[in-house]
Image 1 (cartoon, rainbow, N blue to C red):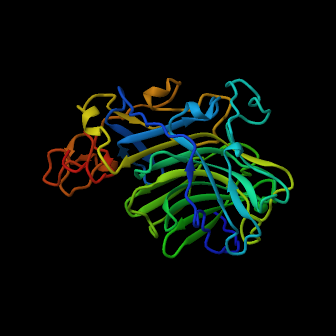
Image 2 (cartoon, rainbow, N blue to C red):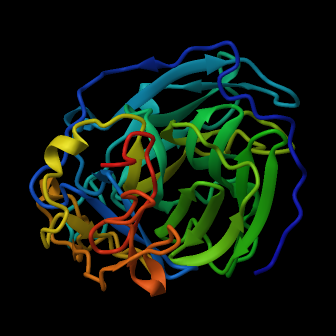
Image 3 (cartoon, rainbow, N blue to C red):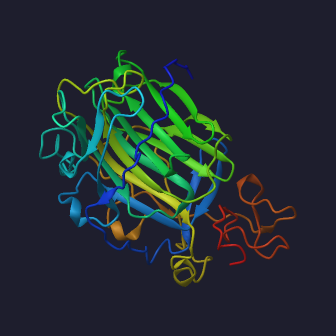
Length: 380
């Protein structure tokens, strides 16, 4: 894995003095039927499995009307220039657009690859702020999990795109794209950022150009550790600055003319696209889990989440696990493992231990996989 050197920017205050306006609020839906006891994700670098209680899966390839979905809100806010930025940022509803396309199509209705588009407007901004696009999950109770997104970035110079989890400006797990860094046709630089005290910036080179096609970007957040992947390949792992409180996901694409970060605005209107977001996570409250999970020994009670180990193909069905999606997928019941009661409170992995029936408490599924503990799940 190669490393690149980029200037460390002034602290990126996204929401200084402003309150985000949510365009529309809808109640979230709980998954029912299969997977009622959780989702088993695979930690590629350790070859172990974790079980999370909840899921959010968004298929943006076929989303025609943004308001028809119930997990995301457009974000509308404006902030003045901060630090060395030349311009402010104006996140507008108009810069969030759907671009659906059938699986066999060469592109979406707008001609480019199908997916949710976040736009950055070109030229000198009229009101002093660059029009940009952002969406955020309604749920702000995500505490630990595995978070994945299919993303195609823009090739227009002068923007910054992000896929991140955030609680506040001091608790954030971030994958950022800077189009100004894309000068080599065979590789590119990503910025992996942990906003904490102090902030951690990790420039990382990947062997592809993010603007040439869709790739899956993923981070797994467990107590004391954050692990980053692209197309199923480990690119960084850290135990520093790991959050321990709940938050939500945000997707954005913006520019403010900061020479130390985004540059821009772009010479032409620029858009980045998201084909999907998949999140498997715990919550800060029961949220109905104990009611819907009646028997963890059922074959389909815990569903296995497949790994994406190659670039996702936007003209094929995306793999989803949640029964409510009704789309073909490669998930299924989590495979059983020997039920050996743990002698030391460890479980899952190669030892096959389970905590069920042990003196250490019920922290595992009946398959021996580790439940990344939510505050309320101990003893259930």
